[in-house]
Amino acid sequence: MKKFTVCKLGIGWSVVFLCFTLVTNAQQVLSLEDCRRLAVENNKKLKIADEEVKASEAQKAEAFTKYLPGIDAMGVYLRNQKEINLLSEDAHLPVGTIGSDGKFTFRPDQLMVGADGKPVMVNGQYVPKDYALLPKEAMSVDARNLGIVQVGLTQPVYMGGKIRAYNQIAGLSEQLAKSKRAQEMQNVILATDEAYWQIISLVNRKKLADKYVQTLQKFVNDVELMHSTGVATKADVLSVRVKLNEGEMVQTKVDNGLSLSRMLLNQICGLPTDTIVALQEEMTETEVEMVPEESLEQVYSRRPEVASLQFASDIYKKKEKIVLSEYLPTVALTANYLSSTPSFYDGVRSKFEGMWSVGVGIKAPLFHWGASRKSLRNAKAQTNVMNYKLEEAKEQIELQVNQAEFKMKEVAKKLKMAEKNLERAEENLKFANLGFKEGTIPVLNVLEAQTAWLTANSELIDTRIEARLCKVYLEKAYGILDL
Image (tube, rainbow, N blue to C red; front, top):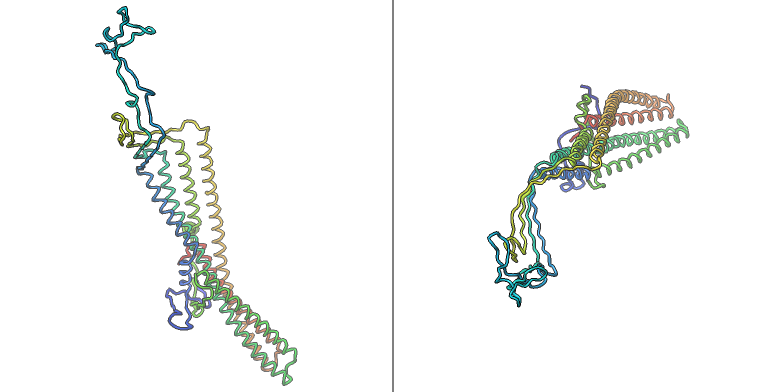
C-alpha cells in the first residue's frame, strides 16, 4: 500500500483536553476526531435531520394502525324551539266493531238513527253514534331537548391495496430520512475537515513566514553592516529592506487568515468564535495511507445520494398503487350503537335508549370520465422522473470518483516533486549564503535564493494539505467518510 508523509498530520483516536477551568491560560487541544464529534453534536442541520427521522418513524407507526379497526364516538345535543305534535287538536275516533273477517264495521245499534228510525247518512256514509276521544297531548313528543350518542367501529377489509401501499411508503420514507441524515453527516464532516486542514496549512505558513522574516531581519543587519564598511551598496540595503517589508506583509496576511480560519472552525464545532484551541496535528506528524480503490457497484451501495433517490423512486412506485386503489372496490365492516332521547323504541320516552347495528359497506366507482387512467399516467411519469434522476446521479458519481482518484494519484506525484524542489532550494540557499559570506555572490542572488526557498516550502505545505484533503474527498466520493 502506498504511503506519503503529510506535515503536521496526526489522526489518533485519543482525545487530550487541557481545560480552561483547571489551569489559567491553559489551551484546549483538539484532534480531528474531536472536531468532527463537536461539529456533529452542534450542527443544526443534523438536528433537523434527526427530527425528520423521528417524524418518519412516527409516521410508519401511524400507518400500521390503518390495518386495525377504528372506534369513533359522537354526541349531539340540540335545544329546539317547539315540541312535535302529531295532531293539531283533539281527535274523535268512531266506535265500531271489527268483524271475523278483520274489517271495521258498525252494528245497527252503533249508528245514529233519524226521526224515521233509519240510520243517518252524510255524503253516502253512515254516521256513528259513539266516538272515542284521542287527546292532542297523547300524540305530542317533547323534542325540545334532543340528545344523540353514537359509538361506531369500522374494520377495513379491502381497500384496493391502499393501506398496504401506505405502510410500504412509510417504511421507505423512514429509510429516506435516515439516508438524508447520512448525507448531511458527510457534508458536516467534509466542512469540518476543510476548516481543520486550512488551519494546519496556515499554522505551517505562519511558522514559515516567521522564520523567513527572522532570516531577512538578520540579513538586513548584515547588509547594513557591509554598507557601513563600504562592501555593499545603498541599493543592496534597499532591496533587502523591500524584501523584509514584503515578508512582514505576508506574515500579517497569514495571521489574519489564521484568525478567520479558527473562527470558522469554532463556528462549525459550536464553540465561541473567540476560543483559541490548539490542533493536535500542529504538534505531530504521521503518514496518510492511500485509500484502496472501490468498484462502482460498491460506491453506489454506499453513497447516501443514490440510496435517497432509490428510496424516492420506490415511493413513487407505491404511489402508483395508491392512485390505482382509488378506482377499485372497497369493503369495510361496521358496528354501531345509537342512543337518543327522546326514544321511540317502546313508545315515546324522555330517556336515553338505543340499539346495536352491524353491517358491511361496499363502495365501487363506476364512471369518472377516465380520471383513473389520467391519474395513473401522472404517477408513472413522476416515477420515471425519479428514475432518470437516479441514473443521472450515478453518472455524476462515476465522474466524481474518477476525478477524485486522478487527483489522489496526481497529488502523490506533486508531493514527491515538491520535496525534491525543497531539497534543491535549500541547497541553493546554502551555497548562496556561503558565497555571499565569501563575497563571490551579490545580494540579489541571495534574495532570489531566499525567495525560491520560501516558494518551495509554501508549495510543499500546500501539497501536503492538498494530499490530506484529496484523501477526504476520495473517501466522500466512495461514501466511506464517517466519524
